[in-house]
Length: 329
Image (cartoon, rainbow, N blue to C red; front, side, top):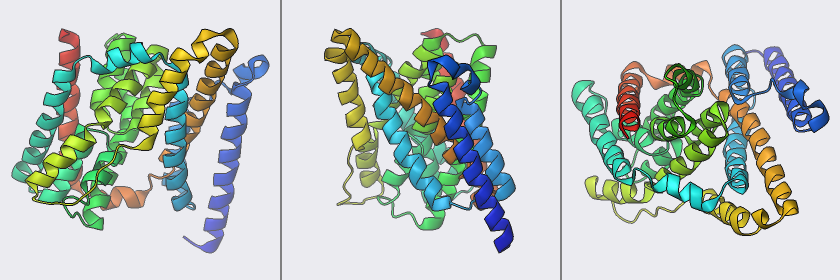
């Protein structure tokens, strides 16, 4: 890409970002909110994807930092719109299935990757970990334990990222096609979609209750990073690697507790909680633009066919089995 093309690419990027931000602000103002209603999570993601595929990545580092930071802020903000008791009840439901699904996905993923497709062990295990728990966060936690190199990490993250983008469009459509209710879709999205960002985005696109259930269950599953990391240390005979719970998960629980015990006790407190929750939704929508803008042709080219095929096959199996389980509950 020439310097002139890069310059125009940056101008277009800034223009899109300002336009989306403007209409998100408009959508937050009651008197004119209808004019900003078109900026939905799928629209923001698709806009980012289209820009990245046509114009490349003029601000790749900025995209990465903003998507990570804003996702964490928005997830914490969503906690101010949730009841702690109801959310914990949703998160604990199907705990036995969670345990089986996490370790079953790891085993199945490695079988498909290593045995059937000939993917190297590290890459296969990283893709399986990302599918089993919480996408990129799990890959980032497990990678140092198995001593994965940059290439293996890049392939695994790229595979999961592409499937996340697809899931945000595909899952709500399938949910409506199958007439899933809010609870069913929330559970399904939390189990079958990799990253928290896409889980929250898909839940927001499907409905209020689906968003709450999907977010809580997904963050509950994210806690499985710790036992999986310990299991991985044993499996790969690696010692001395420290694993911690992401701070935004702790703050999410704190936000729910504050909303349940303090804000919900008064009308003003309820208004404050609703306002924070609304802002968090707008921030989440903008986050999805940054995530979409991170998916360039270079990312797609670096993934490779076999690792991507492993990710797709494993994802399909997990999605179908979890959907059948939810139907039978």
